[in-house]
Length: 426
Ligand SMILES: [Zn+2]
Image 1 (cartoon, rainbow, N blue to C red):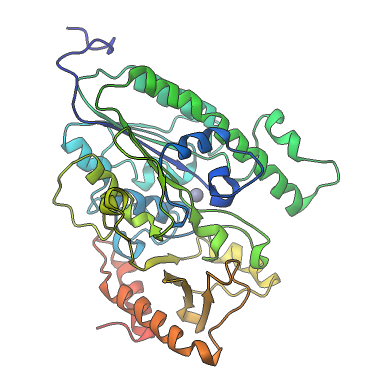
Image 2 (cartoon, protein in one colour; image 1 turned 90 degrees about the vertical axis):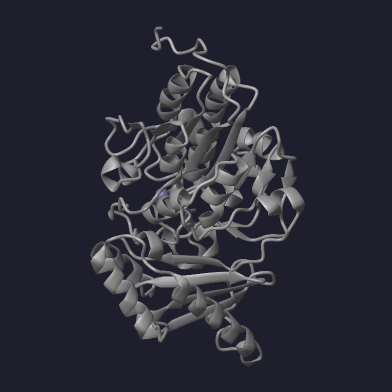
């Protein structure tokens, strides 16, 4: 038997669906047509989303790459998996979805596009193949990543299910996409932040343009069990909202609201706008959709009853951030009067959002339903004091329920210290 040609079935076709996970790096939800953009940057994503289960109100757990991806794949909050900022490797103690699926007989492969998710940060756990083969300094264009993934998928025999993660870096600056994608959005008068904002549109249009290549390779190889596609982004990007640019420095809406869709032929296309959800629920949901039983202790909850039975997901959504490199970022932020010392925590629940920076004793409260762009901080408004207390209590309870599950002692001490400061430690 020659396995190398791959396409011939070695046994009966698997009855287990394949899994394709796509994470777009730095893709803010509101630039997608399915999420309300009228700019038509993403016709391929929009067509897929129209045929999928789509969450219009999905939040990343953090506004940086490492912590967010670790949560997506582990179903744990950053305080629990220990990757509080970029550059911290994911502990071997943490069990990821790819490890679970490999154990269940899946062939697993990842195709990544940037330094921030290179294998030394250990998101490669559970992947038979971790394709991080790019010469372009610290990243590769989505077209090449998709090509590598498509080739691998085409070689898979159909008697074994596969799990593929594709990470696309295109919406992250610097914007080096082909000219034909950037030029329609750029005029000669644009400089600085305005140029970046315009270029971002072209970068998003480019990343969308590579999707059909991947989708076609799946269709060409599809078994009767089909392929579950779970697509999201690790965080968004700010272009002057609340005075900020980039990501990783705060938890304001445009940097944490991300697309989230699930697609499989067994799922009825629908937009679930009655529930606000977090990416901590990504892996538990995917595993239940695949009907894969496991014993791994995850904090996220499966959204399957929400998807299939319309049961509302009413849980508070938690987010946090740590600055990657305070020394280099602090001077930039001081310019706009922002203080970024220590952690920042946030909870969205029942139309409200609280943001707490314990080290500098700062609290913000927003009523998102009335104020989706967070213009009016209600934390000092007397009539809102009851809501403030309620949100503080929810945040405190969530933090108290989180324990580090990985052996990273210094982070554990830091988390404990932060909790003590807030009076949350036991
Ligand atoms: Zn990222």
